[in-house]
Length: 162
Image 1: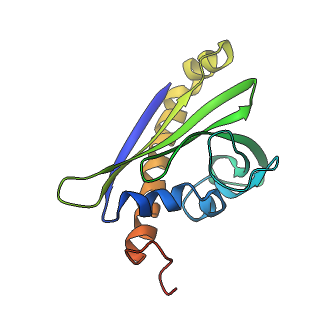
Image 2 (image 1 turned 180 degrees about the horizontal axis):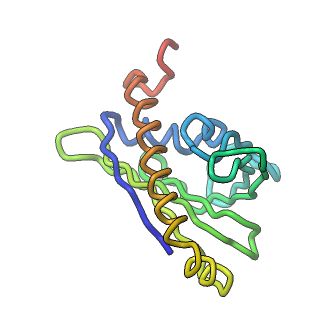
Image 3 (image 1 turned 90 degrees about the horizontal axis):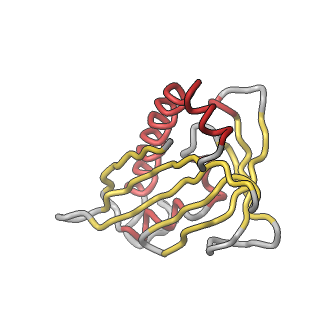
C-alpha cells in the first residue's frame, strides 16, 4: 500500500523544494490535482498547515472534488509531505524527499502510503494493483514535470524570465 519513484534533477535541493512546497503551483505538474490553495488560516508551508486540492479523479472529468490536506513534513531544501483527509481520518500520505546528488543536482523521490484501515485493505485487495500502477505512472509524470520547471529556472530559484 505504498510506492515511490525517484528522478534526478539538475537543480539545487532548495530550488526543488521551493516548487513542491508551493502548493498553489500543484496544477503545473500534477496529473490529477489541477489547483490547490491554503485554507483554515494557513498561508504557507509549515508542519500542521492546511490546504485543499481540487482533484479531477484519474485526470479526467467530469467528476471533481476538493481534498483536505495537512502538511506533515516541511524541511526547506530536504522534504515536503502531506496527508490527505481530516485530522482524525487520514486516507493517504504523499511525500517528497530531496537529496543532493553526487556530482550535482538533486535526486527527488515522490512517494505515497495509504493509511492502514479495513477500507483501504479491501480497496487495495480489489483494485490496488490498478491504482498502484496508476499512482506510479503519475508520480513519474509529476516528477518529470517538476524537473522541467526547475531546470528551466535560473539557479537563484526565481522563475525564468524574472
